[in-house]
Structure formats: C-alpha cells, structure tokens
Image 1 (tube, rainbow, N blue to C red):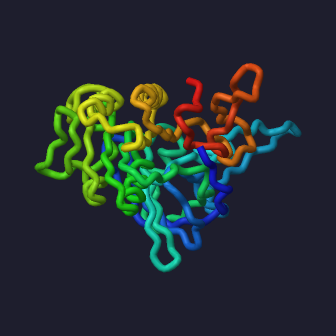
Image 2: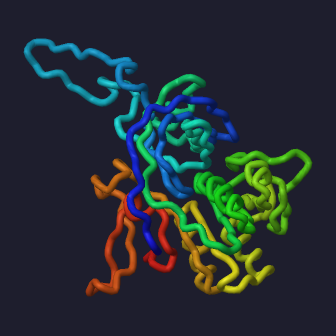
Image 3: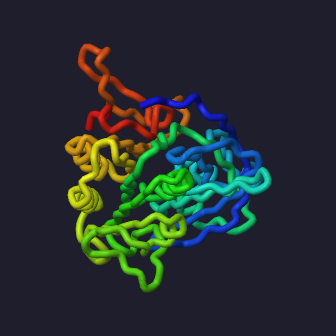
Length: 317
C-alpha cells in the first residue's frame, strides 16, 4: 500500500465542547482546536488524560530523618497517568480555522476514567494527527467495525460519502449496551444483517448500516465478521467492484481479511496496539508483516508510524 509523506503534527491545546455518554462505558468527546493540521480517516491522537501543566494537584513528600522519600506515581500525581492515550479520530469539521474533532472512547482504565470527567470548557493537551490513514478508492466500499474500532469507520464513511462513493457499514459489539452508536427510534437493525438506516451516525451521511451483537440481543446474532461474510455472499461483488475497510479486535480483523482474500477483494485494516509514544520512538507497537527481502520472509513494522492502516495481504497473523 502506498504511504503518504508524514503529515504535519504538533502538540495543541484543545477545548472541550461536549463529552456525552453514548452507552455503557462509551463517551463521545468533541474538541475544538485552532490551527490543527490536515488529517485523514484512520489517523489518531495521543491524548493527555490529566490536567494541563500548572493545573495539577501536586503533592509534597515528607523528607524525614535524612532518608530519601519513597516516591511513587500515586504519591506524586495521585491517579493521574503519565503517558498519553492513543485514540482514533471519529470525525472532523472545520469552521473558520477551528477544527472540531470527535473522539469516541471506552472507559477501561485510569486515563479514560479521568477523560470521562472532562466538562465543557476544560482544556486538554493533544498530540497529532499521527499515523497513516486509509486510502480512498474510487469504488463502492464496505466498512466493518467492532467495538472501539467503530469510531474511525464513522470518519471514513463521511470521507467516502463526500467523494460520492456508495458505502455500507457493518458494526459489531458484544451486546447492545456496549454499542457506541445512536439508534434512530422506530428503525430497528435487521436480524438478517442487511444494512438499514437504523444508526444515526451513518444515516446522517446517507450510509446504510447493520448491527451485529455477539449475544444476539440486537440486529444480527453473532460476530460482525460473520455478518460481513453473509452480506458479501448475498451480494457477490466482483474484485474490482468493492474495497473493504476494517478496524476492531484482532480476531475480527483476521476473519475479515480471510474473507476478503477468498473473494479477491482489497482490504485495508486499522490495527490496534498499545502505543506509548505514538511516533515510533518507543518501538512498543510492533506488527509482523511479509518481507520477501528478508531470509525468513518477514519483518517488523510499527503500528504508529507505518500504520495503523495496513494492507491486509501484508500482515502475518
């Protein structure tokens, strides 16, 4: 897959416009940022999940009897995390030099728990945009998102629909309570997995979408990768008639990649990895890829710098 030259990036102070709870544990954070560089679907931010410098509630340590104090993160900064958190962009709007950035995140630890407490007017430090985004093709597209992999699919759907490409979206969650989307009242997702106008975030873009839940309580009963395969077999597009984009749990993406390979379809996947720096410095987010130039036939790339979007045919699972 062709890679773009590195996008401009920087550290910015973002103002919280809204921080709304979408479902059990998921929130949509909307930020306003002046002078934010151009970004593309699939890119991400490194978000500082603690107060800005000068706003922290710093603590003093007692120094007694000539002995060194025992300093820990909890003792110095309470529960405030040191490392930034990598979060995908779920959307962007630009008005008069101000970028409105949407982030949909799930509360799973100290950092995101702090983020859930942010209110309108708060300031948050962000680093970005980071990584390489999706390649937009001039043909119909199917988007497959699972859990916290759904947000970048919303941003991508807006870009594809804006380019005039026909798009369908398939969204998966373990259960309805963990679906980070808004359902339109009176328009239920279909049990056979066929896309409808039931999901507001996609419907407002003119993109039909399906919902699959692992426990079968909403929409298609089963994995979203199975719903995608069912949809694909029903419509049988030619290899040049569809491009597939995906993001979500690795098992889901592996299944989507395998299905696309069987149908000869291009498949681009945005991988998820633990990222400490987001810029390729810490070398913590390695991805194993095919590499004919190596004697063993493979090598490592970095999810943050070389991805997070990769051509599925290049990945070694």
